[in-house]
Length: 66
Image (tube, rainbow, N blue to C red):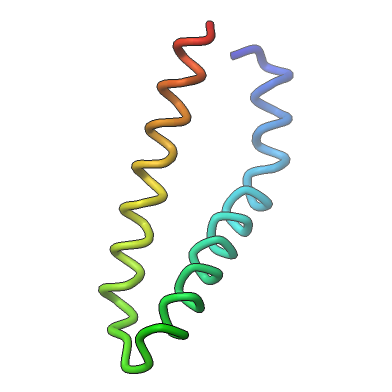
């Protein structure tokens, strides 16, 4: 990665973190609609696992395209 790309990524890091947190909050809210007495820690772990799997699949697709 070039220095310019690294600087650009660094400038957007906080936005990326916020977006991922917002995504987790979105899906936790959906879980809460269906499961009123939800275990929030378990739900967070489940959602994070799905996000990791999704990122791995996306990364694999991007690597295959190169």
